Image (cartoon, rainbow, N blue to C red; front, side, top):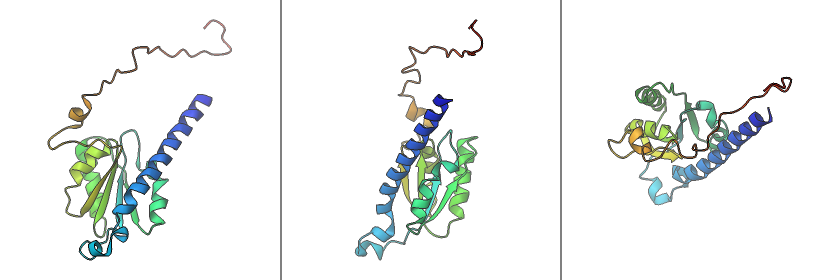
Length: 170
C-alpha cells in the first residue's frame, strides 16, 4: 500500500508542478497583460479550453482551473473519449463551439496532437502545449514518437514477485 501511496503522491506533485508551470506560461498570453498598443487591435481572450492527455481525464486540470478562474477567465476542461484522434478532436471542437468569443486552446501530452487538429477553428486565438506532442504538418503521433525507443530502460526488467506474507512457500 505504501508503494501505491507514494506513486499517487508523485502523480499529484507532477500535476501541481505542471499546473503551476502552465499558469505561469499562459498568463502573459492573455489580452489583459498585453501592452495598450496591442490591446486595441486584438480581441480580449477570456476563454481557456483545457484538453487532457492519454491516461488521464478532464479532472487532471482540477488544480489549474481555479487559478485561471481567479484571474477572471472562463475555463472549460474537455472530457475526451480517447477512442480515436477523430473522436478527441470532435469533443474538443464541441468545447470550442460552446465558448463565447476567442479561445486559448491548451493541450497536455497526447492532446498536443488533438489541439493541433482542433486549433484550426477560427475561434482559436492561441495554442499552448504543456509537455505536448507537437506534430509537423502531416505528421502522425507515431511519426513524432518513433524516434524514441519504447524498450529503453527495460533491458533489466524483472517480473514482479508478489508474496503472501502468510504463505512461506513463495
